[in-house]
Length: 88
Image 1 (spheres, rainbow, N blue to C red):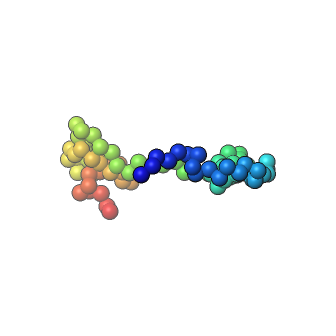
Image 2: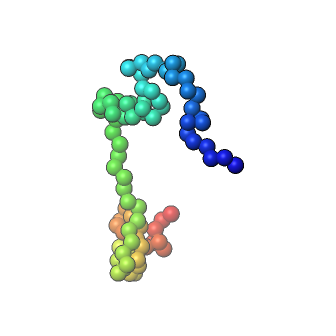
Image 3: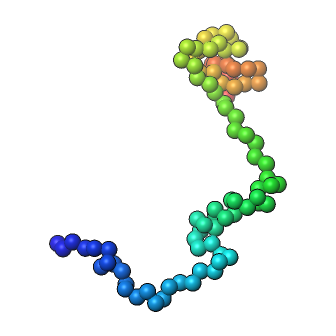
């Protein structure tokens, strides 16, 4: 089996270069990047910040419902509760 170089894959014909319109992005990635950087596109949109649903503490934390000390507690309307007290 012979070694192959990158030149073996080139057509060698540079006369047919594709003209790219300056106003049009050259790829989907460039188009996507252009749309995301547009401040007008995101000015009217609002996104709620992410919320945590559980917390973990190696030393343990107290469940606000039953008082048991557990390593993982879950957010609930009444505070942080253990998995047993959490209404799933």
